[in-house]
Length: 128
Image (cartoon, rainbow, N blue to C red; front, side):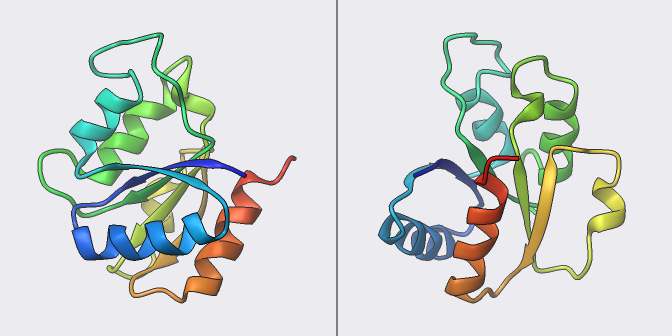
């Protein structure tokens, strides 16, 4: 199955997503904010040896570096720019903010249904 990076500052939500997705056979990594995620992906600081996940679940509202900044930074990155992103939000429809970012493959809202999360992940990592 897929290797997934969950980027969210809510530990309880991360734990729930991890449980749902690991039960579905995925390998999960975590980052508590956008700065941590960019470092883990080898973007800031640059690290060409960093292994990219198959998918990133990205919260919008986070301290230090928010999800919109992370997605914008990744959009122009030569290596990480094509990694699919599912945006997680509790703030209504955020599609307009992410329109210019082709790597954003979908959105899901907090709180979420585990079945919907599994379906969104499968759709995002399915071969095109």
